Image (cartoon, rainbow over all chains, first blue to last red; front, top):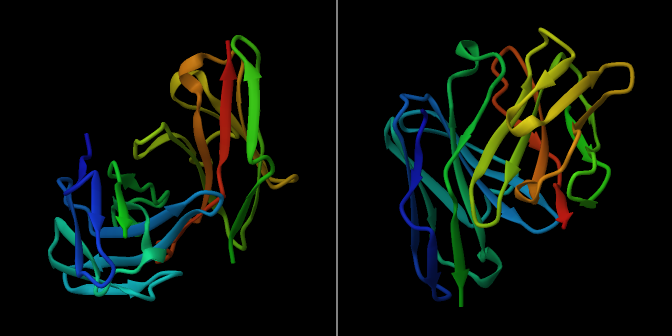
Length: 116
Length: 115
């Protein structure tokens, strides 16, 4: 089974802190994704990576950056956390599209981040 | 461009009665379609996916969905609801093929099951 793990289930940080959210997948997937989930808004894509050191902005990248130094690990960074970044953050991974034309993504359990 | 609309933000049923969660999509190309389920404080789990092999797709836990191209719909059904089905459900569309990585999520339908 594909396993996507996230470093923390719950996290509380203060405004202005630098925050790192870590995600690891064990199925050699090329693609990795970070989403945020807010009530009534569904999932919104923050960033995605299709290879080591490669990244593309999603729909809401402002205030976030990412790092992918190894294929299995994808980090989301909040350079200076703000209260409007309080949310559930979900990581996902998938095969490169040509290997899986159905583009199924596998999700981690999520990190609920609260910024005070 | 692709989009997905879940027609109900909240559906409430009684245990043992049928479930219908409605989803309409828009896609410029041949789409892949998914339903994901999220139980409270859990990540998203794939319920079923449309693979173009058959228009009626069977998933886990007795759920199924029918792809209707003429109606651009992919509604999720289950004949008899169980208390454990209470969760949030997301309809998702992807334009398959090429280099398109993007999944577009609906805003979710919260299913409540009453005893």
